[in-house]
Length: 593
Image (cartoon, rainbow, N blue to C red; front, side):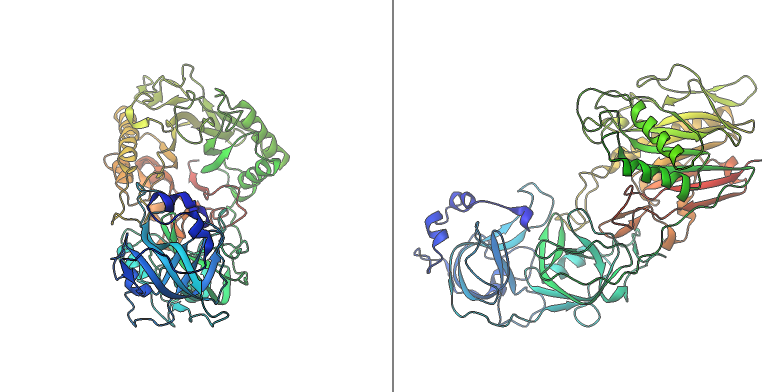
């Protein structure tokens, strides 16, 4: 709520009374209102917008339930008895309101279906009263009892987000409570925590470690975002519980309904331990993928140490790591720098300090600000690899930011790369403002292996789940489908030279296993998406607003699926507030001899 700060000018510009009256708070507005003495449920109505939007109202009765820097919430102590209409509303004052929690008020102003984020925002509106004044009657009145969401009150829907919107809209602005809320995501930098009521009882498919799984048929509308705008929330991880009753005001902003707590909650720790992969046996090639979350030399040493411990400890020092989000030497400074040798040197030194093996690095510097990501950061994918267990990199000169790599016959019917490392069709429009995939040729005990490191277009700019369009529009999806088609075309070109070529596609594909983009990648290539083969409770590498989902993938060509292999997502980041990255890494161990 506090992020939606506006000024008194907005009210004056809308034709409401001027600042002098706004600041008086002494009596009723002098202009004749169009609608007199409506109740809050009359203003709210039963739909997604108010039937009185734009109308001036007077003497709206309520009890102040919470206060913020630019307004307060009021709730009618005489509800209409209908679950379809909310009894609470936000009263926007523009400055610190001269009321106290428990005050009996009568509000004067204009009803406004305000859209957080601006008129073009894809989110919903929030019905409020832009106040011109308010009168205060009695003080210290008891607050209306909160509506309990869960098994002991109103049960939220578990099927569609559209049903969830109707449910939460009917409670917007009211005092709401959840009992024994369990965290299904870590506390964010904004101080918010996604939870389920009643320790997750009677909810959707839970993950094996306490979260909730995003599935094709449901995005889990039973998730509740608890916000810390009115009372701070302690740092929590997935599985931690807020015992007892957590009470606050249900608000809407930033594309989500949020329960703004009015008291600091207690926490009972219950998060699972971080996971560790086993060490690869002799003859097993270990290949991992890891998103390093904009790693650059300006990051504190602790981040480099954390990444090193992830690679050496949690991932058991894989032979090969396909890495995403390594930034250039100047990080977010938009100064034209594209080289990342200092970033990589600092990372390799940290791995060595963590008693890890001697790793080498291969990558291609992008053109400045041509690959998306943080402006000036020039994120790129690359290969981090060790050569003491049988893996070698095949260097072939000629690779740069604009030269495409192609598959060629080595003269014996086997596929090799024209350049190594090399970028896949970098001039293709599919990669506009997006990271270009990097192909590298390796040998493992004499067997040739082609690996493609990917980091596809993000979902930034897609409609929020709890937005005005249902189902939400995924504007970013067509580009990922196009990117998938480019990668699939390259894999097919390798297979056209050598049917049983050993190919691995790895990286942050920014999409789920059942998406059209993943289907475009696997159709016609025979690539097998390894996370898709896991049981649903274990199938996630990323948490977004409490939904556990797969964004990071490892795919094997048919020849590799026929060899013994073992795949694992190593849960060590996404579920924790103190994370090295917001993605969990994963790896596959292949018995190639």
